[in-house]
Image (cartoon, rainbow, N blue to C red):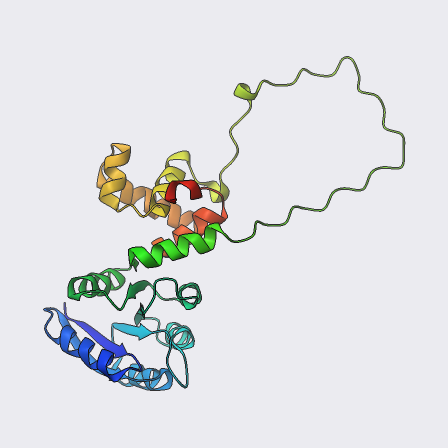
Length: 248
């Protein structure tokens, strides 16, 4: 299947270079190029590409807003973000806007082709530098505020009864429940996804088949409402399932 790709970048040298590069790749057809966000939207409406390679910083409408509009108006078109620096502050905003792939502009032809195929297959593709930025952003976000303390009752508090039940030893206490009904194995798979492991690497780490890994991923995505691995990384850190120290 040929992937129909639209290139969006305000720098003519970069834009023309990407068009030439993509034209040499088998299985990819360039259907147009644009220098600003408004032109991107017009071309998407006219050509209905499978994938847009989107620069984040463009005039008239930036890449984040263009991504948001594309995903709202043309849900069959996926967006792969191209960023000059992996620590671009707009990367996280582009994720929230619906981008499924993130590459730095130093990506080679193989990286781009892999990202295009991944998003067309419903997966996410993150450049390692971009993923580190994403992990650092989520791991460094402020914790959720604790609920306010309950007011102290005005009545005198009775002394504890000497017949009160003994405290259950820590080893006998039940394990804390996981969010959204995740099983322990699904949480383990999610933790490894957050560390950037592929399905094959997860399978090797847990001594299970890759097909079993895919089943666990499908189950946890269904339970949590997640769409892709990029969202899974954010979810894992926000729910405290991932261990930030493992990525340092």
